[in-house]
Length: 495
Ligand SMILES: Cc1cc2nc3c(=O)[nH]c(=O)nc-3n(C[C@H](O)[C@H](O)[C@H](O)COP(=O)(O)O)c2cc1C
Ligand code: SF4
View 1 (tube, rainbow, N blue to C red):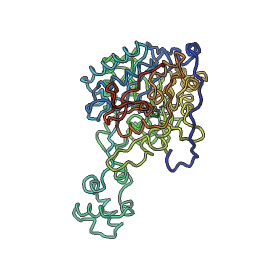
View 2 (view 1 turned 90 degrees about the vertical axis):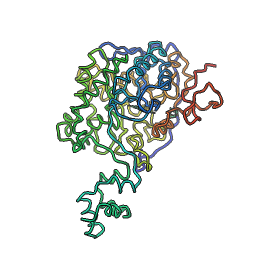
View 3 (view 1 turned 135 degrees about the horizontal axis):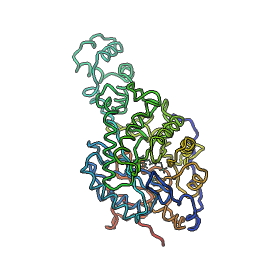
View 4 (view 1 turned 180 degrees about the horizontal axis):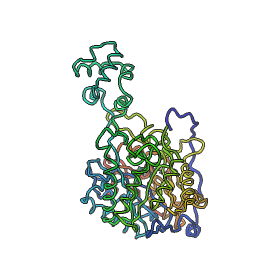
């Protein structure tokens, strides 16, 4: 929620839960199988959605820590595990996993093998494919005015007007820059275009509708092939499928957004906004064939002013299903448009404003609270997809951390899979514990987002609950690079 949000916020207690007996779990919907696409059957409707843990090498390769992270999740034997957002381009992206070249295949194949082994072959494994545009860190004002800001005739005119000095119209560029550097905020706000002002206050950020930039104009030409090749590599590495990341703050979500004003047939009306996401889906399908799962994660609501809402999402969902998407995973928010201002030297983080809150809701919430908050979006999309005669399963997520809630969602037909990100981070074994009638042993997520704060700083993601009994002196406990936190969840102790 943004600071301007006037809704009353209260702290919600974690609800008391009743865990099922082993027999109840065995007969439940959540632990029953579900088909995804033509060939893949998930043994359960439990699902771990993508979570970036910041454990890859600086050049995007799988590391032993990446393997440990996924082995730990696989040990809980979820029906489906989706590997973190993985970059489809062959460009430097920091410690984000990458799949933009064949040299990444051996590491990813090792990851597949690790999950197979750790889950005893019970978990189906997909990988999320992401493309994103450039987001610069918020600059030092001096750097911004002396290096980044373009001194155009319009800017000179605006400055001359604002300071009442016509010499600004033809003064040498360094003088204009110097003048801006010492100007007060009121002058700066009058002189800079809204976009330049944003670049100064938040850092420069590209939009998919910046078609004056050749590489942005070309996106519809290059992206389908990039997604198709990435999917082919995922198939070669042995994954069961791919998830096309059309959600949150990234390229494809921005094509789908109502804010997308491209005038080249890929922006404006819905039918144009969905065109590139569909072209990428078709390209991927043509490359990997019918048997390989191709799912889509996208937004049920952007939660930003002027952005797409549930109406758009329902319409997109039907288009995706009729175009052959094997599943639809519905998320919410997580956009840049309403993100908080970053500190100088840091990049804007799309999970900070109201849209960010809706993506990963915490217990400090409005009267609805965080638990299962986003289910109505998935329910509406699922109803429309079914009414149109399509069978693609729908996945819901957001504040789900109990068997009862998951089971009720399935019982009401609001989704086909119930996903849990943070609860599974808190306790990777929880699906197995619940399935075995040992729910009382579940380490329950507190939904206070310590983990998200680590993600924001690109630090190795861990859960605060893991550190309750960490002994940094114990050589058997692998620690994060700060030497203070347990790097993987503690082993499951039954005594
Ligand atoms: C540390 C962290 C990293 C995440 N990374 C991704 C990601 O790579 N791709 C994605 O679609 N969602 C990502 N998410 C969002 C989750 O998949 C999920 O939608 C969100 O946390 C809400 O579900 P939950 O309430 O069960 O945690 C991330 C969430 C967390 C906490
Ligand atoms: S750090 Fe907090 S919000 Fe994140 S998984 Fe752990 S308990 Fe849940």
